[in-house]
Length: 202
Image (tube, rainbow, N blue to C red; front, side, top):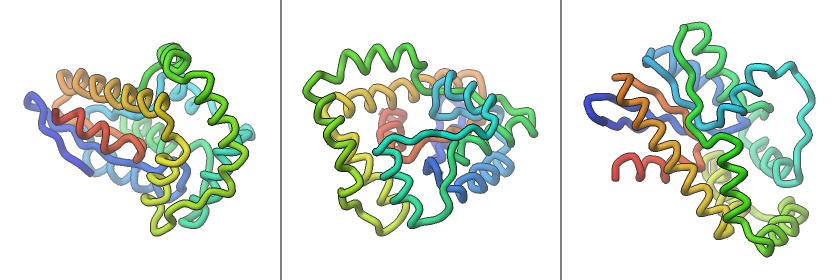
């Protein structure tokens, strides 16, 4: 966990691995021990609404998501929706702590996606999605796998710029929350943790 002091507030940033069941307990322990005044979560408001309304429906995975799941299974049980996020909803509800989405909303994300991801990159992405299962990833740890997967699958120019913009958006969201709350916990997907951390301290 990374601690940032900002304008008299303390922001604790916890990187999480989407899908691993064991991450749910990590999130529960962090929230229960820190007892922050609010928890920021690296999803959109629409995704948070989806988590709250989830009723054990089957989730259909893309080829890329299947490859991610297969790799992650080497390090433990995997579930969807991500336990790190589902547990955040449960614990904050139990403790009466506000849970606040800090990522782009779907409208902004879709707008920037269309502007940044050109036709050629879309074709490459479509081609890659059918070959991703044959790619080799670093498997030394769950963390190394997730970061290597992100580099190899989401490394196109347009998607890299978009992810950097997401990190900037989340950074600004946390800065705004820090102006309201003196003690804040941010749950951030591991892939965006380093970029967000750099933007927070710049």
